[in-house]
Image 1 (cartoon, rainbow, N blue to C red):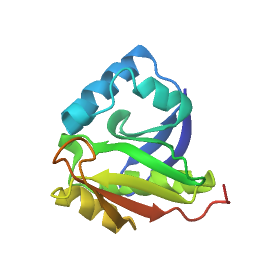
Image 2: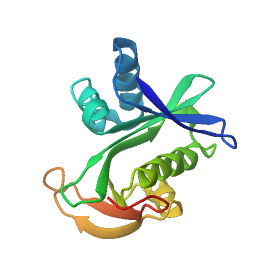
Image 3: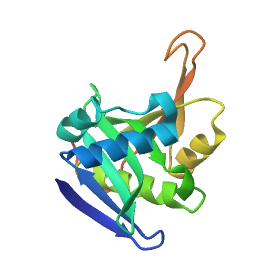
Image 4: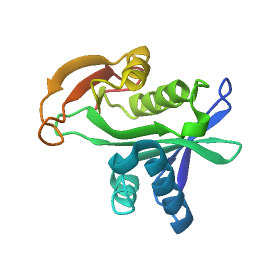
Amino acid sequence: MAAGLRNLADSGMEIRRLTGLDPGQLSRLVRYGRESLGDAAPDEWMLPVIAAFGYLFVGRIDGTIAGSAQVFRCRQEGDLYMDAFYIRPDRRRRGMGRAMLEGVMEHLALEGYHRLLVTAAPGNREATALYETAGFGEVEVLEDFYGAGRQRLLLAAPLTGGGGR
């Protein structure tokens, strides 16, 4: 089950929101997530939950999944947290990350949300540079977020263009 979002002509990417997963989609998303994010990738237990109760986006080029974003609501009204975002390694450095991130943010703004939060490893310049170009700014440093000595940057971006939620 998928809801069409938009076709990003410049990148050739079509972004869709999935609200359910068939076994083949689930298997591919788990595999692609692990290729891109390693052990931090959502697994076969979490992806169906995100699809059913959050926002699971895929970006496709020529019908093949090039990337994904998994988003869910925060306790703070109007805020969302992007738990995972990736472009597959063989599709990087072509503007697809930026195109997909902007498409996801546009969709969430139209849904009426106000702000998107994400974390990144402090040394991950590729990720933080992408987020900064999309309007994210640092909120705080989260010490020991994923365990002792595993620091994360909390970043936030306003979502504009939608109604209030």
